[in-house]
Image (tube, rainbow, N blue to C red; front, top):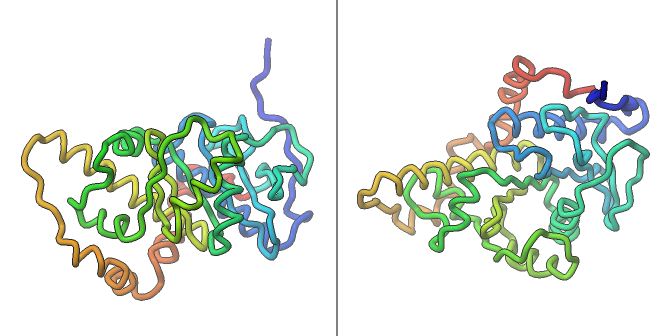
Length: 259
């Protein structure tokens, strides 16, 4: 009988710095949370996090593990050329490397880059008008949103400059006909940004399905969204405010990520 058991993974806690281990734990938690929230797409999307105190190294998922299986030790460390810096039984998703290496190289403020193919996200990415200003959630996304046209599966290096240009200094990127991307200085920031992006798309699909006339938020309110976000989160930022509670939820529902 064929075994489908996961291969044994070395425990990397004693093999990396404390800062890298904390980054690994948070990144594994983000993968588990994406699965818990139902945003995963089998093994086909990806989240990356910059290795602390490194120039071009980042952590990404082992290509073949389900998101709810990922642990801190199973994450793969790669450099900017795609070279795996640790031995292991899994490769890296080539499309994942293309997208994430491009963003990390261009945006040194991006501690984490998160990409999904959720049903609502892809549905809105296929709508010509993009994100509509029809919810409170939407003002925070529209305040920092870019769009990138679909060029096929992201496998070609020549797409990188166009992706980076379309992202610009934004923290949200809608990949047309493809999905959603967020980034943030921390893993918590990128995850909570994706929560808002996903909520915006879900609300929009439901509102359009209702068939009635939609009320739009005034552009001046969108322009002030950053100031309002700082005020409502007491200056902590949404990531820092929500992350401890998200980890407590994960500890109850999907423990074991921190090994």
